[in-house]
Length: 238
Image 1: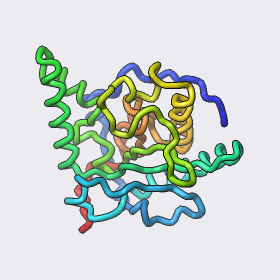
Image 2: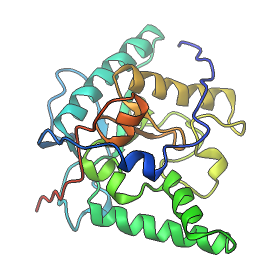
Image 3: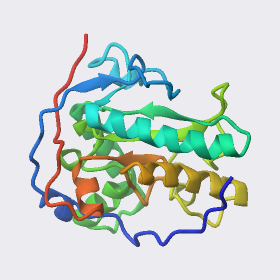
């Protein structure tokens, strides 16, 4: 496998004010279910529908059509790299679309946690800090069907060692893509994921190793695009 060098990460994520200033020209693309989609020979795995999403989405792992196409491209890159090394590695999507109401609850709960931990912080400081780890809903990628939380697994769906679990915020030092608390192998696994996703056109998120997006405001800011392609959508499947 390729040995990846440590990238220079952003010192801070884009602020709410930077993101909300990006206009959205939603292309109106439909959402597709990754768990039932045809991947033309590329095997991509999906987790179960997240429990809190079941009130809105009865089944599946949904994302915009364009995001699904980029995901296929990322898997092809991963397949080529891993096969050259005698392995068979696959992308595993743990979370895709998130209903905006869930995002609002997540942000409120995390903000409350930060407020309790830092009682001397201002409301604005708490909001911006919480936004690093739980996007303010109106600029979030998941409610737009544009963001994916994913990792890499082998052909038996066994996760390779990424150093921490997706969504685990108990130790924030392990959340960024690059961390001095990781082993060399763990760090290389994270950089492999970052390489295949960015090579396919996704924007990384430098505060969470597992989060990537395409077409949302985060993506537009990262690549200096004039507008976002996807905005928040109230999507439900019963």
